[in-house]
Structures are given as structure tokens and as C-alpha cells.
Image (cartoon, rainbow, N blue to C red; front, side, top):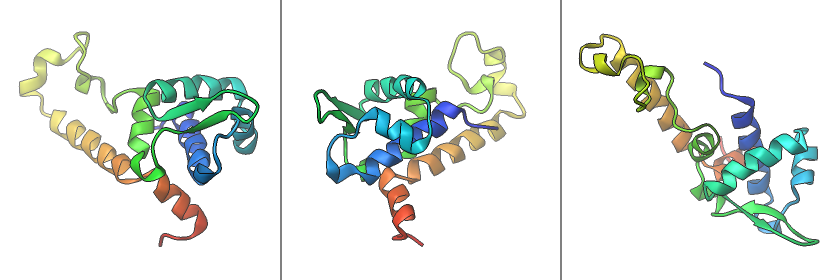
Length: 142
């Protein structure tokens, strides 16, 4: 299983904002340059993050983006779900009417494995905050 570039870039860009949290808004072009991410691609990702309430934008000469909440309150899982939607390692866990094995839910021999995998992935992503990521960078965490 591999996470998308949207997720990877979204988490990296949000970590940059967390690292500069006390410095005010950061221009999107600066984040894109610093992380070597396409500006246009990052614009699309930030649109999703803003819609999810994780980012705020500030207009003007000294404008840019900043976190909507303190870094300790934003989990990596929040970012992943804002950019990709719910984490479902297999289609049968999706709560959509088009899920092919929806009718087999009760008798499925493998479903419990996929549910446990989904739950563990969510646990890990929801344990790590943006503050934790900045602590890793500054060497404050073992």
C-alpha cells in the first residue's frame, strides 16, 4: 500500500507551516520552493486543506497561509483524510452503495483483517501531530 503524492506533499507542506507557526502567514510560493513541490499542485492540495478547516489564508502583501489551529491539535490523520478521504485499504470497507461485497459483510472471512489494518493505520496517523513532526526536526523528541 502506498500513499499518494497529494498526501505526502500535504503533510510536508503542513509541517513547514507548523515549523514557522509563530512567524505569521507563509506564502504558498515559499512553501513550494522550500519543499520542491509544484506551486499549482500545492494550490490544489491547499484548497482541500482549507476546506477541511486545517488552514487559513491571509490576503495582501504579507499574506499567505497559516495553520487554523496550533500544531499540537492537528494530526497527520486529519491531513490524510482532508486530502484523500477516509482511509480504506480495500474497497469492501468503503461505505458506498457501489461496494461490490457490501452484501457479503456478515459472512466475509477476510473482512476482520482489513478492518484491523484500517484501524491500526488510523491509530498511527492520529497519534502524530504536526508539533511532533517539528519536534523530530529540532531534535526535541527521542
